[in-house]
Amino acid sequence: MRKNKLLQIGSYTFLTIGILFVLAPLYLTLTIAMKTPQETAENFFALPSHWYFDNFIAVINKANFYTFVSNSVFITAISILLMLILIPMVSYAISRNMNKRYYKLLYLLVMSGIFVPFQAIMLPIYRHMSNLKMLNQTGLIVMYVTLAFAQGIFLCVGFLKNVPLELDEASNIDGSGVWRTFISIIYPLMMPIIATVLILNSLWIWNDFQLPLIMLNRHPDFWTLPLFIYNFKSEYASNYNLAFAGFFISMLPIIILYGFTQKHIIGGLTEGAIK
Image (cartoon, rainbow, N blue to C red):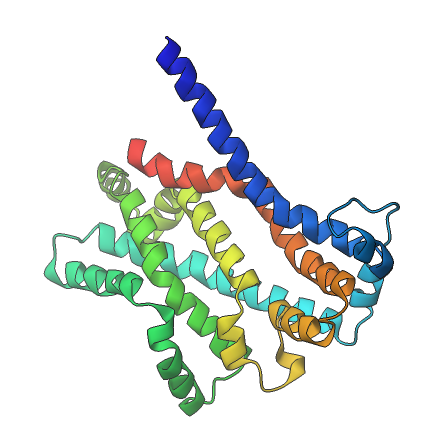
């Protein structure tokens, strides 16, 4: 009994420390963004004496800010839409034909992409997309969808292994073809893992810096929000308040999305294992 109590105390202590590590950067970002430079100089860590919104207004009024936001929204939305169409389709085909050599080989080939670090393919990606004249938003979307395939198919195939094959057979007996079976029966059953793929990739694409830097850095009109924040930080390196206001604005949409949907990440990852 005493041992269980000590384990419980230890667990709660560990979780509390973890929460503090997560919340501390968010606290600093928000408090510094809401203070004047004078207040920040007096006490870097203290709460602001009053809510000061001029830093946010200055960032939003920065030239082309709405262009950067719309670029990020467009790239993220189109990339996610294509992922949610293509990844479940490919995963369904692989999972239902894993006994065939071609599909098993295809699955292993896709899975090998998980073990390749991005730094190893960064230069070939740039040269290849440059040769194809695709150093633009379209090329960036293609790369996001391509790079998401390995993780997405790994998750979806693992989930579909626990969806009974009898559902497909019953649907075929009722006269449904493969497409109708997938759209009407399998795809709705995949919603937990599809939600997981959506959230993980939305977080990645919205916050990604490396790929946009490689493919969109030719002109400011092509920048996504992380590229804008990077250049904004460099321009206002001595003004912490404006820089942190920019950080918080870029973080806010994805924080809201994660807050509403974070339960689906664990649900999607675990439901397939216990289905």
